[in-house]
Each structure stands twice: as structure tokens, then as C-alpha cells.
Image 1 (cartoon, rainbow, N blue to C red):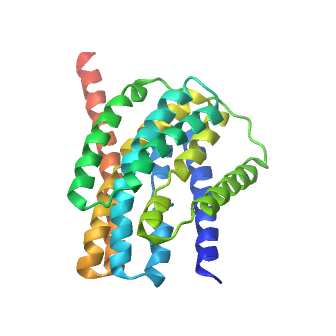
Image 2 (cartoon, rainbow, N blue to C red; image 1 turned 180 degrees about the vertical axis):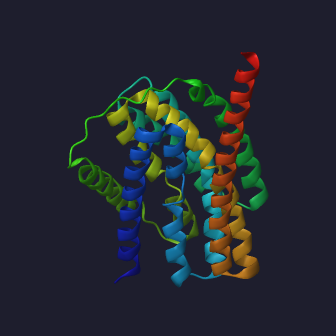
Image 3 (spheres, one colour; image 1 turned 45 degrees about the horizontal axis):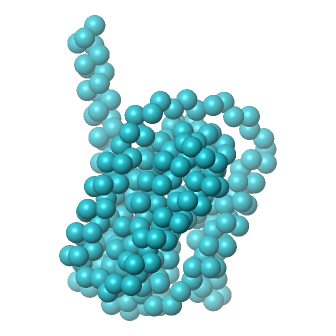
Length: 272
């Protein structure tokens, strides 16, 4: 099978699975767990795994660096989703967020990045975006009781798969810059935001996206790890270390949530 079509099928199937599963988890366990699951690198992961089969280490390292730089377009995309989801329909919110992503992504794509400028840019953009989405985390979310039908999961998988297929086909590009941006295009968050908005409402979608921005911080660490580790130790070790980085960050978030809840419970007991 042609590598493009193999990657295409893997990416469509993986993204559809992650989005459907994250929606189900958000329905059952709340926005934090749905966001944590959705932040798994389902888009970038298959992209770089496929590249590892045919590309040189320098190409993969360059693509990872461009992916890292393009994260500065992803964070404003999430900010737009968080704010628009509470006020408009699902597709208007997504359309507005995609416009924001394009506005940031185009000038970023015109620059030949090195690590330090990309890191400084990411730090500044990320700190601002975390602040702009902080209020959404305090919103009270009541997940409605949704009537489920036997065709819900297959239908959601089909819709998300078609959407991913369209985006992958449209965004396929040659060279490390195009590969880097395609790998971090917010396809999972786009699909998840629409499904959550239509199924659980705009507030739930907004809180989930705000939580997802914190969860996706693992990619801000994993991409530089991939960039430098591939050059130092080869493609295999680079991919493994990048994956380990995202898993460690997810565990950090879970432990932080557990500790915060424990402290809150202790304070409540002391106050009574």
C-alpha cells in the first residue's frame, strides 16, 4: 500500500476513535478526563511514525521543530473555541477558531525557525492563552442526561472520519514545513469541540477545550524532545522519548488533580 494512503487511513481511524472515546468519557466522567484523553498525540503521533519509515533524521527533526513553532497557532485556536462555544453554534464557533488558526499559522509558516525563537514565541503565546481561558475552568458544568441509541457511536465515528479525511486530503503538503504544520493541525480538537457542542452544549465544550489546552502542554515538551533526541540518538529513540514525555505530563496532571481535590477535602473537614 502507498505510504500516504496507509497514513491517511491510520490517521482517520485513530482520530475518529479518540474523538468518540473522549466524548464518551466527557459524558460519563466530566470535561477534565475527556480533555486529557483527547490531548493524546493522535495526529502528530501517526504522522511521525510514518515519517520514521521513510524519512531521514534531519527531515524529522526539522518537521518536529516546525510543529513546535506551529503550536503558537494552536493555542489561540483553543482560546477562540473556548470563548465562541459559549455564545454561538458549534459550526460558527469552529469556523471562527479556524480563522484564528490561519491568521497565526500563515506568518509562522513563513519564518525559518530555530529552537530558541520558537520556544520564546510559544512561551509568550501560551502564557497569554492560559490566562485567557482560566475563567472557563471555573464554570459549573452539569452534563445532561443524553438519550443514547445503538447508532450513536457508529454515526459519530463516520462523521468525524469524513471530516478528518477531508482535512487530511486538503492539508497534505511536501517538505518539512508543510509536514510539521499538518502534523499539529487541530483536527482532533476541531472534531471534539463540534461533537461535544452538539451533544452536551456549548458550556461543556468550552470547559473541555480549556482543560485540553492544559493537557496538550505535553506536546510543547514532546516536540523539542523529538527534535533533539532524533539528532542525538536516532529516530526510534526520539519517537519513544517524545511519547514518554506526553505520558509523563498526563500523569503529572492526574496527580495534580488528585492532590488538589485531597487538599480541598481537608479544608472542608477543618472548616466544619
